[in-house]
Length: 117
Image 1 (cartoon, rainbow, N blue to C red):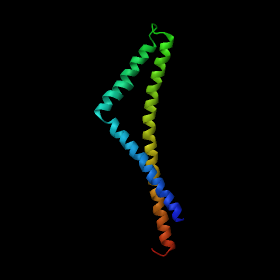
Image 2: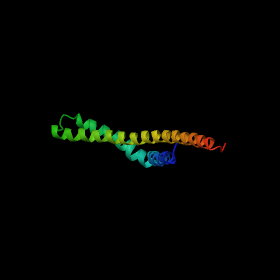
Image 3: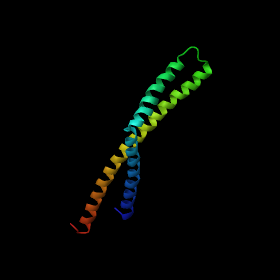
Image 4: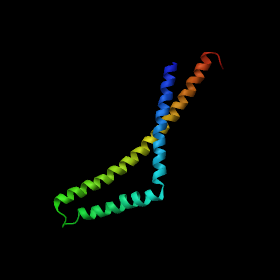
């Protein structure tokens, strides 16, 4: 294993750490009372219910229903966006763990090859 390959692994670890940090920010954000009230309860729940009721209201014109459907899609898209950040952070953490184990193995092999046991 060359020094360049080791450096590539180290760069990959640093990049993955940035993704994990973003996931940490998300976790910090979603656990605040403000997020819980405004986004989780207010947007994901209350606003979604309001929009579904509006969409199903026969007095709402068809063109307005299209806008309501678009707004409902936005709620789903935002939830997916947050979920993807969390999933990417978990994947990045797994990559970090794997890369660190590989580095330890490589360093051990290199020290054995050089008789530095």
